[in-house]
Image (cartoon, rainbow, N blue to C red; front, side, top):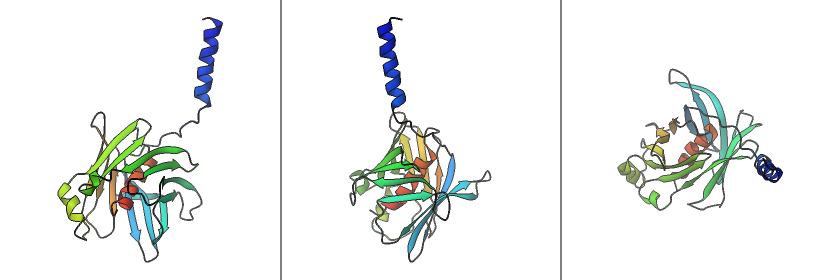
Amino acid sequence: MPARRRVRRADRLRRVTDLPQSPAPQHLARFFVKQRITMMVNRYEIREAKLDGTEGAVIAVAQQKRLAFKEQVTFYADEARTQAVFSFKARQALDFAAVYDVMDGAGRPLGTFQKDFQASLLRSSFHLGGPGIDAYGQERNQVVGILRRFIDFPFSFHFTFTDKATGAVVLTSERQFTLRDRYTVDVPDQRLDFRLAAAMAVGLDVLMAR
C-alpha cells in the first residue's frame, strides 16, 4: 500500500477512535414500572421481572416533589439517591412537543424521545430514537385514548413501539387496571438499551396528562 494512502487511512482511524464512545448497551427483556403518589412527592420504581413473571428487586428509583416541573427526571440505583444511573431532560421547558434527551449516569447520551403533539390530540403518539433505533409508538386503542381526555378514570391502556423501517416491535408498555400506575414493559429488540426503554416508559406516564 502506498505511503500516502496508509497515512490517509491512519488519519481516518484516528478520527473515529477520537470520537466519544457510546456507553455499552444494557438490554433487559422485561421489567416493571410502578408509580407511588403521596401528598408531597411522586415516586417511580423500576423493578426487575423474575423468571416466574412476578416483581423482583428495585433496579432504579426516582422521586419528585408534586408541584415540581417534570422536564427532568433522574433515576438512582439506591434509596439514598447517591448514585445516578440514568436521566431524561427536555431541551425546551414547557413545550408540548419538546425533545427529551436520555443520558446515562455520567451524562453520556443514550437516545431521545419526543411526543408527536399533533397526532396525540386523538391518540397519544411518540418518537423514540437511539443507536440503531428509530421507532414510533401509539396507544393501541384509539377509543380509550379519546375517552381518557374526557373521563377521569384509571383506564387500562397499552402502547406499542415499532421500528419505522421494518415494522418490528421494539417496545411495549401495558398499564394495569389499578388506581396506582403500574406498567409491564417488554423489550423484544435487543438493540434497545434498558435505560432508554425505562426512560421512555416513565416518560409515557409523565407526558400522558399533557
